[in-house]
Image (cartoon, rainbow, N blue to C red; front, top):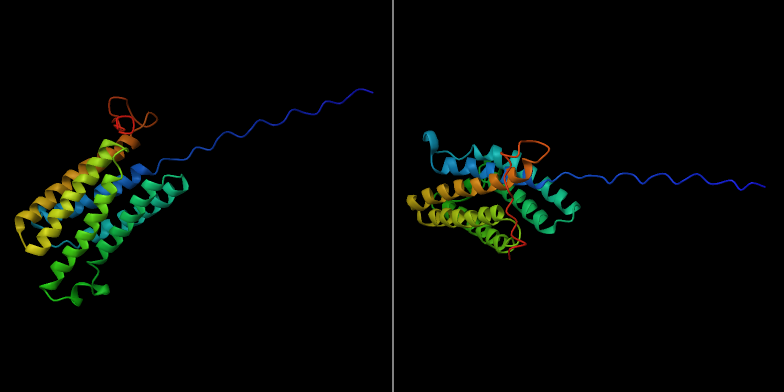
Length: 210
């Protein structure tokens, strides 16, 4: 009797490609800081900081929280922790300007700036821990977190002292942090598939240099 040959096994399915969520997280990080810093510097004569609520809660808060969850799914614990934490920061920062929560009205006019100073100092410390934990990631990431530490230090000190020069320095350093975040975002977003080689930015990975 002839032996029937079994059909060959089907080819394995192609590996699934996941997108890189980091550029979205860094873009949201930088955009919230851009808005906050411009308002801190009273750009175009705008002195009220309420506009930052839109960016902090509805862009930075939502986007960075989602990016944190996606990074955790991809196994990137450091990035997941940073982005999810900063998503929470954006929600809480925006909540400071929500009158429905009554945070500002719960304090006297003298107490509220100092309460904001404590709030910023806590996030300054958290960002410092993130910064020293990022030394083997990329140069733009380290630069962004380091600039953020400097900016939050100045803004926290300004809230305690009322020193306008410290406030201005914090706003200017926030713009520096924005530049770093945008570089980090677009070095991952401007890829070979999306744009010309002359436009693409090198990510400057530090892991091989440390």
